[in-house]
Length: 164
Image (tube, rainbow, N blue to C red):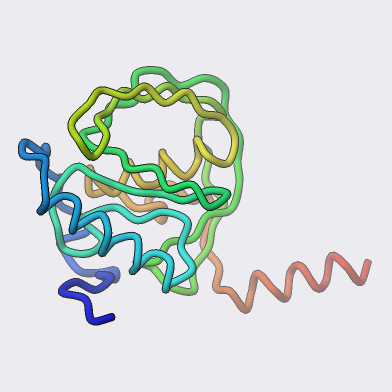
């Protein structure tokens, strides 16, 4: 399939811009989500925010256990606890780093049709949501990472751990 959009990579300045609220729901938004899902899946991603494909709109998608979640105009209304885990990003290929995030979150948003939804998530899913939410504000995981490493450095560390 030929896409109108592609994944934008760091240091493209679009990734640092704050996205605008989605005001109109309908075919354009549905087409955007469909294209985002195809791009995310073909790049083996778990989540994708509209700014990552050049669309400065407050929308992101993620897919866990083959269930696609569309999140429009999200606001994180509560954060509970914290945990550190390694993250990566389709817009920053080959770079990883441990990031501290809330363990549990409550998000108020809209679905693809403009209906209000409440997401009460924890663990990995909460992490994915917070990562994608950051994109809507022009923030990247590299801003929050305790340190950064390449895929090769990460693999070498894991191999050394196994050999001990």
